[in-house]
Amino acid sequence: MYTREAFDRQRAAAGKIERDDQLLLARFTVPFGFGQLLLLAWLDRKLGNAATPIEGIVFLGYMAITIVLMVRMVRRSRAARPRCPGCGARIEGLSERLAVTTGRCDACGARVVELPA
Image (cartoon, rainbow, N blue to C red; front, side, top):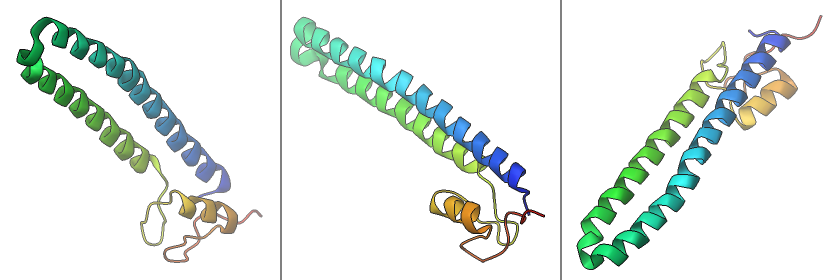
């Protein structure tokens, strides 16, 4: 069972990890997306139809890095979320809001957050 302070600290830490990873994702995808568009336009002007394999490789590389960053973000965010001491379920999303309000896990009903004394 978590104290209210420990539960709030863990929620805040998970939120910070999520925000930091979203910022990293945005810092990669936006400039490299525009850069990719400029590169593809330049390749079309210079090479014409011969640029198609290069364009495909550039696009697939961009998408692969984006997917890796997204998967990393989701995994890190989930790993940082608190778990129910009763059933071990992750407390995230609506479950997190319910645990804050009621102090209980919505999956098993076990007490997650101690009542104030």
